[in-house]
Amino acid sequence: MTMILLAGAAGLGACLRYFVTNLGKMLWPDLPLATLLINCLGAFLFAVLAQQALPATGQLVLATGFCGGFTTFSTYMVDTVVLLREKRYVQAWTYYLGTPLLGIAAYLLGTLL
Image (cartoon, rainbow, N blue to C red; front, side, top):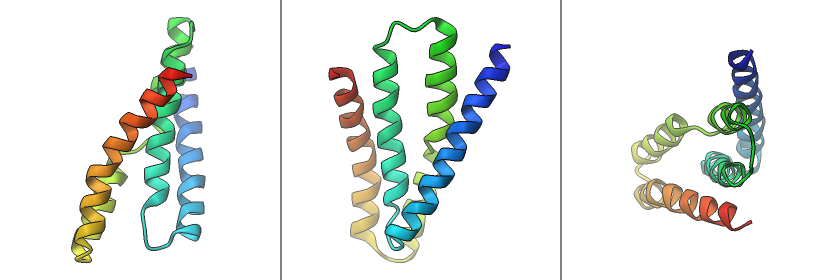
């Protein structure tokens, strides 16, 4: 039963990521801000969940499943490579270095709540 819940939560996270990605492409067509937003929100939510007194299965399903399905390291890397190929070096390096820093900040903010 845990595996089914885990898979379902990961699927929901992935569907939400798809929705936010498409919205981001409409709002910011030239920048991968949707992926940045997704990863920061995922880090924040993960931190909030980690602070809760949830049973182990709940932590697994929500943190690993939903947050894991929602966030995306691979798209972050692809977005960085695309910016580099387009010779948008300042944006590429700002995005590449800024994403983990903002993710850590979002996680720390989540732990404070």
